[in-house]
Image (tube, rainbow over all chains, first blue to last red; front, side):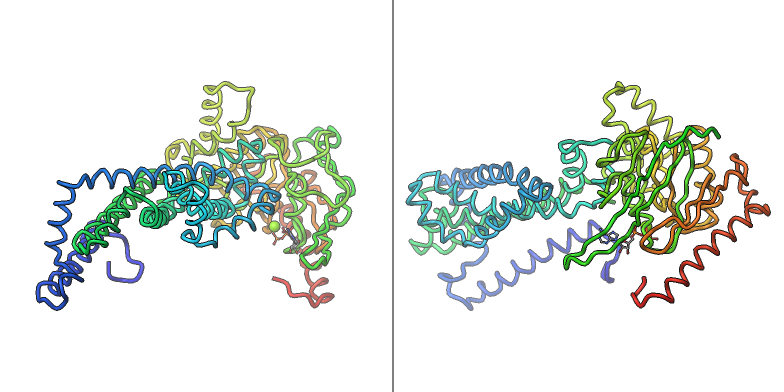
Amino acid sequence: MFAFRAAPQADLELWLGIAAFIFVLAVWQLVAGLGLVHPQFLPSPLAVVSAWLALVENAGYLTDVGISIARVWVAFLAAALLAVPLGVLMSGYRAVGAFSEPLIDFIRYLPVPALVPLTLIWLGIGEGSKMALLWIGTFFQLVLLVADDARRVPKEFIETGRTLGAGDLALMKDVLLRAMLPNMVDSLRITLGWCWTYLLVAEIVASSSGIGYELWTARRYGKTPEVFAGILTIGVIGLVSDQAIRLLHRRAFRYLV
Amino acid sequence: MTRTGAFIEFRSLAKIFSDHRGRRTPVVEPLSLTVAEGEFVVFVGPSGCGKTTVMRLVGGLETPTSGEVLIKGRKVEGPSREKGMVFQSYSSFPWLTVFGNVRFGLKYRRDLPPAEKDRIARRYLDLVGLTAFADFYISRISGGMRQRVAIARTLAADPLVLLMDEPFGALDALTRERLQLQLLQLRNAEGKTVIFVTHDVDEAVFLADRIIVFSARPARVLRDVRVSEVLPRDRTMEVMETAPFRKLRREVLALIRDEETRTEAGTTEANF
Ligand SMILES: Nc1ncnc2c1ncn2[C@@H]1O[C@H](COP(=O)(O)OP(=O)(O)OP(=O)(O)O)[C@@H](O)[C@H]1O
Ligand SMILES: [Mg+2]
């Protein structure tokens, strides 16, 4: 387990992961408890937890969490729905790749916050501008990742499919997509994480609901425990969805040994 | 064997590769050759001479620079189910089971109902002796079994010609022997036309009705050795101990050796 590239041991690895959290919590409690830092800057973990519980009970906080999750998933699914076919086509047809890749690469390097003013001008402060921002941030990254996943499929698989009589469409559906699926699920998992980042940007700058908005409001009134509670919420949601997708990956792709 | 004329015909087939600098490498010289229906033809030749390229040209996976290949009088234009290929490795789909892979060979045959496809897939699985491993994923079976999966899958697709590029190259000697025997039996049962590439001269003589010895790059036919005129069609491993076998083997080996030394002396190009 502690040797280089040793065999996996699921239980032990789980406990090591939990130990890391306990360690950070312990250090945090120690620093806060000894009064080394003013609570205005670093409230104790207990203060944060009670702030979180208060938020959940009183302020309709869970509604905000729900709104944020919904925004991320709607924008993410909309991005994925287009990015996956386009990515596959970009790898499959040289003309599509040559046409779209430089442009997508250009847009991909624009920092999403730089687009906020523009989306506000075009779409106002409603849901539309937030969706657009998340979609832009996710789609252009994802499409290039998907195209790369497709390009990494061994040529032999494609040629085997062809010599067994598969046409273009069948080849993409039955061979290419199947071969790239495990890597693509990873790409989706990674871009889902990025999507959360853009959500926070959007909600802080232009919103009256959502986790980011609550976080920013708490800051404005100097409620540090609530700020921490907000950050913690985002972290927990991220951890849960990431682990859920990993679990799904292991279940769905058992053939990968 | 009955000669029904040209089943596969190479007509002045030539291939020149150009690299990114536009430097042109002729890999196949204008090559003319005919293969009869049901013939088992083995390509041998010095390393890097262009055997794989010739094979891929027949399979429609490369486009000739000039000339053409005809199968049953029809020009080869791109890959299709009529030209079944077995590669050296990497060709079985890891997301399918052994049975799933063999069944995939029938996926695009619209003439068969699903139940019939299942039946045919099971039959080929049985023919290559893998029925007990039907539900295993590819990552859980050995290299020899993987090649048998690839062969069963390709045969299930019912191609006109079976193209095999060093299919047993990565296997140990005993597994290789077993698969060679199995392949001969399968071929005799199915009557398929086979083109087979190998580095191994023993394998070539053992399997072939006919051996085509290629020159060093660019590939040109150095010798057309009619093995079936010397050795019986039904062969067992014992044939390897006979005098005619040894004579053929020596002859082919000498041709390749001479060709390799000739080119090594005449070229400064790095060869690996
Ligand atoms: N796509 C390609 N582009 C450029 N050159 C190529 C390409 N494919 C093959 N070649 C060159 O053509 C020559 C013949 O290659 P080929 O793979 O056909 O030989 P081979 O006889 O099968 O070799 P081996 O015995 O090692 O399998 C080699 O020198 C190789 O570098
Ligand atoms: Mg080769």
